[in-house]
Image 1: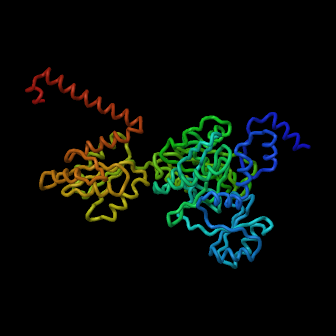
Image 2: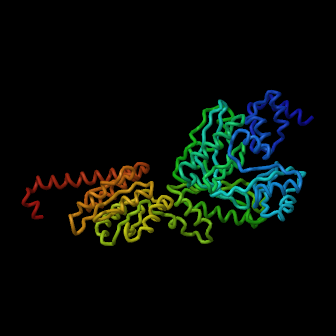
Image 3: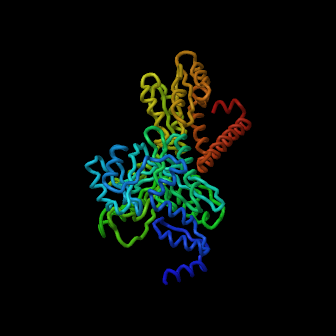
Length: 507
Protein backbone atom coordinates (compact mmCIF):
# COMPACT_ATOMS: atom_id res chain seq x y z
CA UNK A 1 0.00 0.00 0.00
CA UNK A 2 2.83 2.39 0.80
CA UNK A 3 4.38 1.80 -2.60
CA UNK A 4 1.02 2.18 -4.31
CA UNK A 5 0.33 5.47 -2.56
CA UNK A 6 3.82 6.61 -3.53
CA UNK A 7 3.14 5.72 -7.16
CA UNK A 8 -0.18 7.50 -7.25
CA UNK A 9 1.18 10.67 -5.65
CA UNK A 10 4.22 10.52 -7.92
CA UNK A 11 2.00 10.42 -10.99
CA UNK A 12 0.30 13.61 -9.79
CA UNK A 13 3.34 15.52 -8.55
CA UNK A 14 6.21 14.41 -10.78
CA UNK A 15 6.75 15.97 -14.20
CA UNK A 16 9.79 13.86 -15.10
CA UNK A 17 11.39 10.98 -13.23
CA UNK A 18 15.11 10.29 -13.65
CA UNK A 19 17.66 8.17 -11.79
CA UNK A 20 21.00 8.83 -10.14
CA UNK A 21 22.07 5.18 -10.28
CA UNK A 22 20.94 2.26 -12.41
CA UNK A 23 20.46 -0.14 -9.50
CA UNK A 24 16.79 0.68 -8.90
CA UNK A 25 13.51 -1.26 -8.98
CA UNK A 26 12.99 -1.30 -12.73
CA UNK A 27 9.66 -3.14 -12.41
CA UNK A 28 8.30 -0.15 -10.48
CA UNK A 29 9.63 2.19 -13.17
CA UNK A 30 7.82 0.17 -15.83
CA UNK A 31 4.55 0.35 -13.88
CA UNK A 32 5.00 4.09 -13.42
CA UNK A 33 5.50 4.49 -17.16
CA UNK A 34 2.27 2.52 -17.73
CA UNK A 35 0.52 4.96 -15.38
CA UNK A 36 1.78 7.91 -17.44
CA UNK A 37 4.86 8.97 -15.47
CA UNK A 38 7.54 10.37 -17.81
CA UNK A 39 10.72 8.41 -17.03
CA UNK A 40 14.02 9.54 -18.59
CA UNK A 41 15.95 7.51 -19.54
CA UNK A 42 13.34 4.84 -20.20
CA UNK A 43 12.80 1.83 -17.95
CA UNK A 44 13.80 -0.40 -20.88
CA UNK A 45 17.24 1.23 -20.88
CA UNK A 46 17.66 0.82 -17.13
CA UNK A 47 16.67 -2.87 -17.42
CA UNK A 48 19.36 -3.41 -20.06
CA UNK A 49 22.06 -1.47 -18.22
CA UNK A 50 21.56 -2.86 -14.71
CA UNK A 51 22.29 -6.42 -15.88
CA UNK A 52 25.79 -6.27 -17.33
CA UNK A 53 25.44 -9.54 -19.20
CA UNK A 54 22.17 -8.38 -20.77
CA UNK A 55 23.96 -5.11 -21.58
CA UNK A 56 26.70 -7.05 -23.43
CA UNK A 57 24.13 -9.04 -25.37
CA UNK A 58 22.27 -5.85 -26.32
CA UNK A 59 25.37 -4.05 -27.59
CA UNK A 60 26.59 -7.17 -29.40
CA UNK A 61 23.29 -7.33 -31.28
CA UNK A 62 23.80 -3.70 -32.34
CA UNK A 63 27.24 -4.42 -33.77
CA UNK A 64 29.32 -2.63 -31.11
CA UNK A 65 32.92 -3.87 -30.66
CA UNK A 66 33.20 -5.76 -27.34
CA UNK A 67 35.60 -8.09 -25.56
CA UNK A 68 34.45 -11.67 -26.11
CA UNK A 69 32.10 -12.75 -23.30
CA UNK A 70 30.17 -15.80 -22.14
CA UNK A 71 27.59 -16.60 -19.49
CA UNK A 72 28.76 -19.19 -16.93
CA UNK A 73 26.45 -21.22 -14.69
CA UNK A 74 28.85 -23.67 -13.07
CA UNK A 75 32.54 -24.36 -12.64
CA UNK A 76 32.67 -26.57 -15.71
CA UNK A 77 31.30 -23.81 -18.00
CA UNK A 78 33.77 -21.38 -16.41
CA UNK A 79 36.64 -23.75 -17.19
CA UNK A 80 35.46 -24.09 -20.78
CA UNK A 81 35.43 -20.30 -21.05
CA UNK A 82 38.96 -20.20 -19.67
CA UNK A 83 40.16 -22.66 -22.29
CA UNK A 84 38.43 -20.67 -25.05
CA UNK A 85 39.47 -17.17 -23.94
CA UNK A 86 42.74 -17.92 -22.17
CA UNK A 87 44.08 -16.35 -18.97
CA UNK A 88 43.99 -13.94 -17.26
CA UNK A 89 40.18 -14.19 -17.36
CA UNK A 90 37.81 -11.50 -16.11
CA UNK A 91 34.93 -12.87 -14.04
CA UNK A 92 32.01 -10.48 -13.47
CA UNK A 93 28.72 -10.29 -11.60
CA UNK A 94 25.73 -9.54 -13.77
CA UNK A 95 24.10 -7.18 -11.28
CA UNK A 96 25.01 -4.67 -8.54
CA UNK A 97 28.57 -4.31 -9.84
CA UNK A 98 30.13 -0.86 -9.48
CA UNK A 99 32.98 0.95 -7.66
CA UNK A 100 35.21 -2.09 -7.91
CA UNK A 101 32.59 -4.52 -6.70
CA UNK A 102 31.52 -7.39 -8.92
CA UNK A 103 34.83 -7.95 -10.74
CA UNK A 104 37.44 -10.61 -10.11
CA UNK A 105 40.46 -11.73 -12.14
CA UNK A 106 41.43 -15.37 -12.46
CA UNK A 107 45.06 -15.55 -13.59
CA UNK A 108 44.87 -19.30 -14.11
CA UNK A 109 42.39 -22.18 -14.02
CA UNK A 110 43.43 -22.84 -10.43
CA UNK A 111 42.22 -19.36 -9.44
CA UNK A 112 38.77 -19.72 -11.00
CA UNK A 113 37.11 -21.14 -7.89
CA UNK A 114 38.42 -18.39 -5.60
CA UNK A 115 37.39 -15.67 -8.08
CA UNK A 116 33.89 -17.12 -8.32
CA UNK A 117 33.62 -17.46 -4.53
CA UNK A 118 34.77 -13.84 -4.09
CA UNK A 119 31.81 -12.74 -6.24
CA UNK A 120 29.28 -14.74 -4.22
CA UNK A 121 29.04 -17.84 -6.39
CA UNK A 122 26.99 -18.74 -9.41
CA UNK A 123 23.69 -17.98 -7.66
CA UNK A 124 24.59 -14.28 -7.98
CA UNK A 125 24.62 -14.60 -11.77
CA UNK A 126 28.05 -14.52 -13.40
CA UNK A 127 29.63 -14.16 -16.81
CA UNK A 128 33.22 -14.01 -18.03
CA UNK A 129 35.08 -11.77 -20.46
CA UNK A 130 38.21 -12.34 -22.47
CA UNK A 131 40.98 -10.16 -21.08
CA UNK A 132 41.32 -6.92 -23.06
CA UNK A 133 45.02 -6.00 -23.39
CA UNK A 134 44.42 -2.26 -23.24
CA UNK A 135 46.86 0.61 -23.64
CA UNK A 136 44.53 3.03 -21.86
CA UNK A 137 41.04 3.03 -20.43
CA UNK A 138 38.97 5.78 -22.03
CA UNK A 139 35.52 7.23 -21.45
CA UNK A 140 33.09 9.46 -23.30
CA UNK A 141 30.22 11.34 -21.66
CA UNK A 142 27.30 11.36 -24.08
CA UNK A 143 24.07 13.35 -23.79
CA UNK A 144 20.90 12.33 -25.57
CA UNK A 145 18.00 14.76 -25.85
CA UNK A 146 14.31 13.97 -25.87
CA UNK A 147 14.36 14.56 -29.63
CA UNK A 148 17.05 11.82 -29.90
CA UNK A 149 19.76 14.38 -30.69
CA UNK A 150 23.16 13.31 -29.35
CA UNK A 151 26.24 15.29 -28.30
CA UNK A 152 29.54 13.87 -27.10
CA UNK A 153 32.02 15.40 -24.66
CA UNK A 154 35.76 15.15 -25.40
CA UNK A 155 37.31 11.71 -24.84
CA UNK A 156 39.00 11.34 -21.44
CA UNK A 157 41.48 8.87 -19.99
CA UNK A 158 40.48 7.11 -16.78
CA UNK A 159 42.99 5.62 -14.37
CA UNK A 160 41.68 3.13 -11.83
CA UNK A 161 42.84 2.10 -8.39
CA UNK A 162 41.56 -1.30 -7.25
CA UNK A 163 38.90 -1.11 -9.99
CA UNK A 164 37.67 2.30 -8.75
CA UNK A 165 38.02 5.41 -10.91
CA UNK A 166 40.91 7.32 -9.35
CA UNK A 167 42.12 9.91 -11.88
CA UNK A 168 40.53 11.34 -15.02
CA UNK A 169 42.57 13.27 -17.61
CA UNK A 170 40.70 15.55 -20.01
CA UNK A 171 41.25 15.47 -22.88
CA UNK A 172 42.83 12.05 -23.30
CA UNK A 173 46.32 12.07 -24.82
CA UNK A 174 45.48 9.74 -27.71
CA UNK A 175 45.86 10.02 -31.49
CA UNK A 176 43.06 11.90 -33.23
CA UNK A 177 41.92 8.76 -35.06
CA UNK A 178 41.55 6.91 -31.75
CA UNK A 179 39.59 9.82 -30.29
CA UNK A 180 37.25 9.82 -33.30
CA UNK A 181 36.81 6.05 -33.11
CA UNK A 182 36.04 6.18 -29.38
CA UNK A 183 33.51 8.96 -29.93
CA UNK A 184 31.87 6.99 -32.75
CA UNK A 185 31.53 3.85 -30.61
CA UNK A 186 30.08 5.89 -27.73
CA UNK A 187 27.62 7.63 -30.05
CA UNK A 188 26.41 4.32 -31.50
CA UNK A 189 26.07 2.72 -28.07
CA UNK A 190 23.83 5.50 -26.72
CA UNK A 191 21.87 5.63 -29.98
CA UNK A 192 20.84 2.01 -29.37
CA UNK A 193 19.16 2.90 -26.05
CA UNK A 194 15.92 4.70 -25.27
CA UNK A 195 15.31 7.92 -23.39
CA UNK A 196 17.04 11.17 -22.60
CA UNK A 197 19.87 12.01 -20.22
CA UNK A 198 23.59 11.69 -19.63
CA UNK A 199 25.35 8.40 -20.38
CA UNK A 200 28.93 7.51 -19.47
CA UNK A 201 30.51 5.13 -21.98
CA UNK A 202 33.61 3.30 -20.73
CA UNK A 203 36.02 1.97 -23.36
CA UNK A 204 39.28 0.08 -23.83
CA UNK A 205 41.95 1.23 -26.29
CA UNK A 206 43.77 -1.99 -27.06
CA UNK A 207 47.39 -2.52 -28.02
CA UNK A 208 46.33 -3.43 -31.58
CA UNK A 209 44.53 -0.12 -32.10
CA UNK A 210 40.95 -1.24 -31.41
CA UNK A 211 38.33 0.52 -29.33
CA UNK A 212 36.24 -1.95 -27.32
CA UNK A 213 33.11 -1.03 -25.39
CA UNK A 214 33.40 -1.95 -21.71
CA UNK A 215 30.12 -0.74 -20.20
CA UNK A 216 27.64 2.14 -20.08
CA UNK A 217 26.18 4.00 -17.09
CA UNK A 218 22.90 5.92 -17.69
CA UNK A 219 23.69 8.80 -15.34
CA UNK A 220 26.26 11.43 -14.36
CA UNK A 221 29.53 9.62 -13.78
CA UNK A 222 33.00 9.99 -12.24
CA UNK A 223 34.52 10.29 -15.70
CA UNK A 224 32.49 13.48 -16.21
CA UNK A 225 32.97 15.25 -12.88
CA UNK A 226 35.68 17.44 -14.41
CA UNK A 227 33.04 19.05 -16.66
CA UNK A 228 31.86 21.23 -13.76
CA UNK A 229 34.99 23.35 -14.11
CA UNK A 230 36.36 22.42 -17.52
CA UNK A 231 33.39 22.49 -19.91
CA UNK A 232 30.85 25.09 -20.96
CA UNK A 233 28.04 22.81 -19.78
CA UNK A 234 28.62 20.42 -16.88
CA UNK A 235 27.32 16.87 -17.10
CA UNK A 236 24.86 17.64 -14.29
CA UNK A 237 23.33 20.66 -16.01
CA UNK A 238 23.35 18.72 -19.26
CA UNK A 239 21.42 15.85 -17.70
CA UNK A 240 18.72 18.20 -16.45
CA UNK A 241 18.50 19.95 -19.82
CA UNK A 242 18.10 16.60 -21.55
CA UNK A 243 15.47 15.02 -19.32
CA UNK A 244 13.18 18.08 -19.23
CA UNK A 245 13.53 18.81 -22.95
CA UNK A 246 15.59 22.00 -22.91
CA UNK A 247 18.15 22.69 -25.66
CA UNK A 248 21.36 20.75 -25.06
CA UNK A 249 24.38 22.78 -23.95
CA UNK A 250 27.85 23.08 -25.48
CA UNK A 251 29.90 20.05 -24.33
CA UNK A 252 33.29 21.40 -25.43
CA UNK A 253 36.08 22.26 -23.02
CA UNK A 254 36.63 25.88 -22.03
CA UNK A 255 40.09 25.16 -20.64
CA UNK A 256 42.95 23.39 -22.47
CA UNK A 257 43.37 20.69 -19.82
CA UNK A 258 41.79 19.30 -16.67
CA UNK A 259 42.53 16.49 -14.25
CA UNK A 260 40.11 15.02 -11.71
CA UNK A 261 41.36 13.23 -8.61
CA UNK A 262 38.91 11.13 -6.63
CA UNK A 263 39.17 11.53 -2.87
CA UNK A 264 38.98 7.91 -1.75
CA UNK A 265 38.99 6.98 1.91
CA UNK A 266 42.55 6.21 2.96
CA UNK A 267 41.59 4.94 6.40
CA UNK A 268 38.51 4.19 8.48
CA UNK A 269 36.75 6.74 10.67
CA UNK A 270 38.38 9.88 12.05
CA UNK A 271 41.83 9.02 10.74
CA UNK A 272 40.39 8.90 7.23
CA UNK A 273 38.65 12.27 7.67
CA UNK A 274 41.89 13.79 8.95
CA UNK A 275 43.92 12.60 5.94
CA UNK A 276 41.26 13.78 3.48
CA UNK A 277 41.02 17.22 5.06
CA UNK A 278 44.81 17.54 5.00
CA UNK A 279 44.79 16.97 1.25
CA UNK A 280 41.90 19.41 0.80
CA UNK A 281 43.85 22.10 2.65
CA UNK A 282 46.78 21.66 0.26
CA UNK A 283 44.49 21.71 -2.77
CA UNK A 284 42.98 25.05 -1.80
CA UNK A 285 46.40 26.70 -2.27
CA UNK A 286 46.78 25.50 -5.87
CA UNK A 287 45.72 27.86 -8.68
CA UNK A 288 43.06 26.23 -10.84
CA UNK A 289 42.05 23.65 -8.22
CA UNK A 290 38.47 23.18 -7.01
CA UNK A 291 37.44 20.89 -4.15
CA UNK A 292 34.13 19.02 -4.06
CA UNK A 293 33.39 17.39 -0.68
CA UNK A 294 30.36 15.10 -0.58
CA UNK A 295 29.81 15.44 3.18
CA UNK A 296 29.18 11.74 3.72
CA UNK A 297 28.78 11.01 7.44
CA UNK A 298 30.84 7.80 7.45
CA UNK A 299 34.41 7.35 6.24
CA UNK A 300 35.41 3.94 4.91
CA UNK A 301 38.50 2.63 3.14
CA UNK A 302 38.29 3.27 -0.63
CA UNK A 303 34.90 5.01 -0.32
CA UNK A 304 34.40 8.01 -2.62
CA UNK A 305 34.27 11.03 -0.33
CA UNK A 306 34.78 13.84 -2.82
CA UNK A 307 36.96 14.92 -5.70
CA UNK A 308 39.44 17.62 -6.69
CA UNK A 309 39.54 19.08 -10.19
CA UNK A 310 42.55 21.05 -11.46
CA UNK A 311 42.31 23.05 -14.69
CA UNK A 312 45.16 24.73 -16.52
CA UNK A 313 46.82 25.68 -19.78
CA UNK A 314 48.27 22.21 -20.45
CA UNK A 315 48.12 18.63 -19.23
CA UNK A 316 51.75 18.96 -18.15
CA UNK A 317 50.78 21.83 -15.87
CA UNK A 318 47.78 20.17 -14.23
CA UNK A 319 49.65 16.88 -13.79
CA UNK A 320 52.51 18.76 -12.15
CA UNK A 321 50.02 20.44 -9.82
CA UNK A 322 48.50 17.09 -8.87
CA UNK A 323 51.89 15.49 -8.32
CA UNK A 324 52.90 18.35 -6.05
CA UNK A 325 49.62 18.04 -4.18
CA UNK A 326 50.15 14.35 -3.50
CA UNK A 327 53.71 14.78 -2.25
CA UNK A 328 54.14 14.98 1.49
CA UNK A 329 55.84 18.38 1.24
CA UNK A 330 53.83 20.59 -1.12
CA UNK A 331 54.51 23.89 0.65
CA UNK A 332 55.91 25.49 -2.50
CA UNK A 333 53.47 23.77 -4.85
CA UNK A 334 52.56 26.98 -6.63
CA UNK A 335 56.14 27.86 -7.52
CA UNK A 336 56.87 24.31 -8.67
CA UNK A 337 54.05 24.34 -11.17
CA UNK A 338 55.12 27.38 -13.23
CA UNK A 339 55.95 25.47 -16.37
CA UNK A 340 57.48 26.99 -19.53
CA UNK A 341 55.04 27.94 -22.29
CA UNK A 342 57.74 28.70 -24.88
CA UNK A 343 60.73 26.56 -25.76
CA UNK A 344 63.80 28.36 -27.14
CA UNK A 345 66.21 25.91 -28.72
CA UNK A 346 69.41 26.24 -30.73
CA UNK A 347 71.96 23.93 -32.28
CA UNK A 348 75.00 25.34 -30.46
CA UNK A 349 75.93 27.77 -27.71
CA UNK A 350 77.41 29.95 -30.46
CA UNK A 351 73.77 30.81 -31.33
CA UNK A 352 73.07 32.05 -27.80
CA UNK A 353 74.19 35.68 -28.34
CA UNK A 354 71.40 35.92 -30.95
CA UNK A 355 68.76 33.75 -29.26
CA UNK A 356 69.08 35.52 -25.91
CA UNK A 357 67.05 38.40 -27.41
CA UNK A 358 64.01 36.14 -27.69
CA UNK A 359 64.43 35.18 -24.04
CA UNK A 360 64.66 38.87 -23.06
CA UNK A 361 61.36 39.63 -24.81
CA UNK A 362 59.62 36.71 -23.11
CA UNK A 363 61.01 37.78 -19.75
CA UNK A 364 59.75 41.31 -20.34
CA UNK A 365 56.24 39.95 -21.00
CA UNK A 366 56.47 37.52 -18.03
CA UNK A 367 56.05 34.48 -20.28
CA UNK A 368 57.61 31.36 -18.70
CA UNK A 369 60.14 29.83 -21.06
CA UNK A 370 63.09 27.49 -21.28
CA UNK A 371 66.36 27.78 -23.22
CA UNK A 372 67.99 24.55 -24.46
CA UNK A 373 70.79 23.42 -26.79
CA UNK A 374 69.31 20.82 -29.13
CA UNK A 375 71.34 19.94 -32.20
CA UNK A 376 69.68 18.38 -35.25
CA UNK A 377 72.95 16.76 -36.33
CA UNK A 378 74.92 16.09 -33.15
CA UNK A 379 72.04 15.07 -30.85
CA UNK A 380 69.25 13.83 -33.16
CA UNK A 381 67.72 11.55 -30.49
CA UNK A 382 67.49 14.47 -28.07
CA UNK A 383 65.90 16.60 -30.79
CA UNK A 384 63.25 13.96 -31.53
CA UNK A 385 62.54 13.49 -27.84
CA UNK A 386 62.29 17.23 -27.20
CA UNK A 387 59.95 17.85 -30.13
CA UNK A 388 57.72 14.85 -29.39
CA UNK A 389 57.30 15.61 -25.69
CA UNK A 390 57.05 19.41 -25.82
CA UNK A 391 53.25 19.55 -26.02
CA UNK A 392 52.74 17.12 -23.13
CA UNK A 393 55.10 19.21 -20.98
CA UNK A 394 53.03 22.34 -21.55
CA UNK A 395 55.12 23.99 -24.29
CA UNK A 396 52.84 25.92 -26.67
CA UNK A 397 55.33 27.42 -29.16
CA UNK A 398 58.91 26.52 -30.09
CA UNK A 399 61.46 29.11 -31.24
CA UNK A 400 64.32 27.34 -33.02
CA UNK A 401 67.52 29.17 -33.97
CA UNK A 402 69.92 27.68 -36.51
CA UNK A 403 72.75 28.73 -38.78
CA UNK A 404 74.24 27.22 -41.92
CA UNK A 405 71.95 24.54 -43.37
CA UNK A 406 69.46 25.32 -40.56
CA UNK A 407 67.87 21.87 -40.28
CA UNK A 408 66.71 22.27 -36.67
CA UNK A 409 63.46 24.28 -37.19
CA UNK A 410 62.16 22.00 -39.93
CA UNK A 411 63.11 18.74 -38.23
CA UNK A 412 61.42 19.86 -35.01
CA UNK A 413 58.32 20.98 -36.92
CA UNK A 414 58.13 17.51 -38.46
CA UNK A 415 57.89 15.94 -34.98
CA UNK A 416 55.44 18.23 -33.18
CA UNK A 417 51.98 19.68 -33.82
CA UNK A 418 53.10 22.91 -32.12
CA UNK A 419 53.90 26.07 -34.12
CA UNK A 420 57.61 26.50 -34.76
CA UNK A 421 59.30 29.86 -35.40
CA UNK A 422 62.69 29.58 -37.08
CA UNK A 423 65.39 32.18 -36.45
CA UNK A 424 68.09 32.21 -39.17
CA UNK A 425 71.41 32.82 -37.42
CA UNK A 426 74.22 34.55 -39.33
CA UNK A 427 77.15 32.19 -39.77
CA UNK A 428 80.72 32.89 -40.93
CA UNK A 429 79.81 32.24 -44.55
CA UNK A 430 77.02 33.61 -46.76
CA UNK A 431 75.99 36.16 -44.12
CA UNK A 432 73.04 34.08 -42.88
CA UNK A 433 71.29 33.99 -46.26
CA UNK A 434 71.80 30.22 -46.45
CA UNK A 435 70.02 29.80 -43.09
CA UNK A 436 67.11 32.00 -44.13
CA UNK A 437 66.62 30.15 -47.41
CA UNK A 438 66.82 26.78 -45.67
CA UNK A 439 64.07 27.70 -43.23
CA UNK A 440 61.68 29.18 -45.79
CA UNK A 441 62.06 26.22 -48.14
CA UNK A 442 60.32 23.64 -45.96
CA UNK A 443 58.41 20.95 -47.90
CA UNK A 444 54.62 21.20 -48.07
CA UNK A 445 53.03 19.91 -44.89
CA UNK A 446 55.87 21.04 -42.60
CA UNK A 447 55.24 24.74 -41.94
CA UNK A 448 57.83 26.87 -40.17
CA UNK A 449 57.40 30.59 -39.57
CA UNK A 450 60.51 32.75 -39.74
CA UNK A 451 61.87 36.22 -39.12
CA UNK A 452 64.78 38.28 -40.40
CA UNK A 453 68.35 37.03 -40.00
CA UNK A 454 69.52 37.29 -36.37
CA UNK A 455 66.17 38.85 -35.35
CA UNK A 456 65.31 36.72 -32.34
CA UNK A 457 63.59 39.79 -30.88
CA UNK A 458 60.85 39.52 -33.48
CA UNK A 459 60.61 35.77 -32.90
CA UNK A 460 59.90 36.47 -29.23
CA UNK A 461 57.34 39.15 -30.11
CA UNK A 462 55.62 36.86 -32.61
CA UNK A 463 55.39 34.13 -29.99
CA UNK A 464 53.82 36.58 -27.51
CA UNK A 465 51.27 37.65 -30.14
CA UNK A 466 50.38 34.03 -30.83
CA UNK A 467 49.85 33.36 -27.13
CA UNK A 468 47.87 36.59 -26.87
CA UNK A 469 45.15 35.14 -29.09
CA UNK A 470 43.84 33.27 -26.05
CA UNK A 471 45.32 35.43 -23.28
CA UNK A 472 43.70 38.82 -22.71
CA UNK A 473 46.47 40.01 -20.38
CA UNK A 474 49.22 39.29 -22.91
CA UNK A 475 47.16 40.91 -25.65
CA UNK A 476 46.80 44.06 -23.56
CA UNK A 477 50.52 44.09 -22.75
CA UNK A 478 51.37 43.74 -26.43
CA UNK A 479 49.07 46.66 -27.21
CA UNK A 480 50.90 48.69 -24.57
CA UNK A 481 54.26 47.66 -26.04
CA UNK A 482 53.16 48.94 -29.46
CA UNK A 483 51.95 52.22 -27.96
CA UNK A 484 55.23 52.64 -26.10
CA UNK A 485 57.15 52.13 -29.37
CA UNK A 486 54.93 54.74 -31.05
CA UNK A 487 55.46 57.21 -28.22
CA UNK A 488 59.21 56.64 -28.32
CA UNK A 489 59.32 57.41 -32.05
CA UNK A 490 57.15 60.52 -31.62
CA UNK A 491 59.41 61.77 -28.82
CA UNK A 492 62.49 61.36 -31.01
CA UNK A 493 60.78 63.02 -33.97
CA UNK A 494 59.78 65.99 -31.82
CA UNK A 495 63.31 66.33 -30.42
CA UNK A 496 64.83 66.20 -33.92
CA UNK A 497 62.44 68.86 -35.16
CA UNK A 498 63.04 71.05 -32.15
CA UNK A 499 66.85 70.75 -31.85
CA UNK A 500 67.88 70.18 -35.46
CA UNK A 501 69.82 67.25 -36.77
CA UNK A 502 73.29 68.40 -35.76
CA UNK A 503 72.36 68.95 -32.13
CA UNK A 504 70.36 65.72 -32.11
CA UNK A 505 73.37 63.71 -33.33
CA UNK A 506 75.76 65.39 -30.93
CA UNK A 507 73.60 64.37 -28.01
